[in-house]
Length: 202
Image (cartoon, rainbow, N blue to C red; front, side):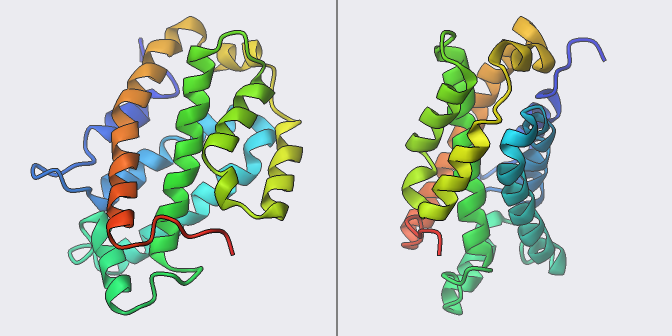
């Protein structure tokens, strides 16, 4: 299709995430996140850990949604059920899944913002800066060390942008930042409202 980039499916999906009342719909939100996985693939080995983490959390939330699509039509209903049953803080909870999925997406959003705003930065600098602003404070020593090692595998910046679609992709990245960031902020706001936005890695 003419005029499409690796971001196009995600951008189309993001439009469907909210209900008419502004509520986060489970299936469209998870689909939008899934559409970002092919973008992560373009980073190669550097993002293997991030992709695996995102994929695992999407699967966890999808399984819950599929167990009762009517009951879990809205994303936050999964969290509310766990808050009521006092299981939200469990490492395998959907609350934990949504929190870490949102944090990983925060990292990607920040990374693409860096790539747009700092054309002189090497990819490793863009990645490290994004990590320090988002995931680092929630990670323990082991996760931070693993991430630092992975970032040494970051692709060459100019080659990466070329693989994404060159200058043509910049408009899509801007649109992605503009439309996806508010969804992540809404997730954080909801999780904070139930006292669960500051859980650290166990």
